[in-house]
Amino acid sequence: MSAPLNGSPLQGVRVVDFGQFIAAPAATQLLVDLGADVVKVEARTGDSARSIGVHGEAMVNAFNRGKRSIVLDLKQPDGLRVAQELIARADIVVQNLRPGVMESFGLGGEAVLARHPHLIYATITGWGTKGPSKHRPGLDITAQAESGIMHMTGDPNGEPQKVGCQIIDVATAYAAATAILGAYVGRLRTGHGEIIETSLLEVATHVQAPMLGAYFATGIEPKRVGNGQPTVAPAADVMTTSDGAFILSAYSEAHFARLCSLIGRPELAADERFSSNAARVENKTALLTELRWAFSRFTTTEALALLTANGVVAGRISTYGDVVENEDVKASGILITTSGELGDVETVGAPWQLASAGPRDTKGAPSLGQHTEDVLRELDYTPEDISALAQSGAVRGPSTIAAAT
Image 1 (spheres, rainbow, N blue to C red):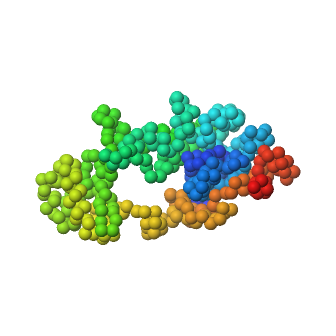
Image 2 (cartoon, helix red, strand yellow; image 1 turned 90 degrees about the horizontal axis):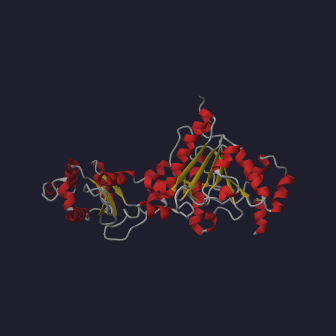
């Protein structure tokens, strides 16, 4: 087998992306970062994320880097025909439109594979396509709520909390991309395509497999425990310092004894309240009081230097400003500045590096319809054809969008 060219294992693979917001665009972004040519099909008003302010712009810039944008009106026969031609020449189709929308255009998975059996067709939904909620709107936050994540997140005496980022959207993107890549390998071996379905609810449930497994085994409904762990201590507990805070785990007997020695309190390891893990869990409030008092004499940097140099697990609780200045983050190269029609944008690149790939790609996200004419020419449309499509409103390119605005 020959080596991939330029470190891009998906070079030459064509993907058609009917994605909105995060889950589907993030899945196809992973394919871009592996070398695929992703054509992003947008409605006349664009990906919905384009219209929700700075956070939407950040979504577009983060999850559409290096893609090509074409604007099609699928409600017009000519626009639908172009979409069908794009799909016919593709290897992979990904969509997360409202359930039933693609089917209404004859572009659902079963219809597409009936015409093109080689295709990999992936659908991402909020709730799946088989249950009673299949037509409900679904977002990251509702999946967090109904999967149990919010029930298990937050202070035990406070209200349920969501995770502070769109964690399920992004995790769903990884799940979808994994299935797509597996199906594509299968197609290379057999010649047969595949229909893939995943949902925010399934992924949100999947990421809690260990906790659900404990529930299945015991029948005991778990409760929120805040930052700690219910069965070991200290573990994932917040330590406050003179200038900030960090997270600490030192629950094995050897690590706890070492921790006590490092902070100048060796007697704590022999204290009957803390002399075993079970005792520390039972007396956790007192344990945290003692440890936090000890660390109040340190700066966060001093505490981390002392602990990590001696093999104790600890990490700074960082602001985004801290993350940007983190030397390990800088060294990884994951923070990039992209360039394109939308200008120079600071964003986050692929979370991996292939040895043969060189530096991370810095092509930016496309403007709305930026590549409409290019993609149509690849489909063998003449300039006259393209002009007629634009005049009818079936497609829009940069010039027609500019004229309309």
